[in-house]
Image (cartoon, rainbow, N blue to C red; front, side, top):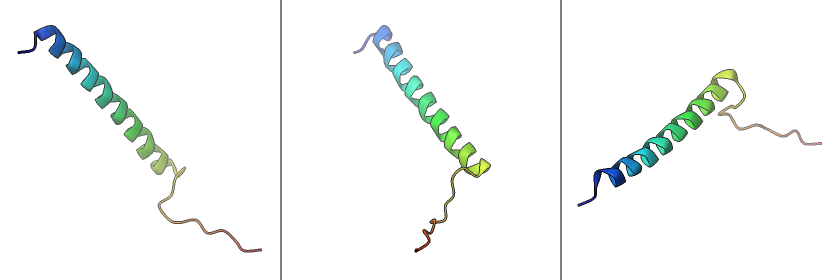
Length: 47
């Protein structure tokens, strides 16, 4: 069975990854809320 030190290290890695994903998701949501991104397909005008 794994010792507590190794389990704490693995938990720290998972916590760091979780926080990074939450930060990125929050930035994307904020971008959509501010209007930087749109869900509609943009059209390109033909010359």
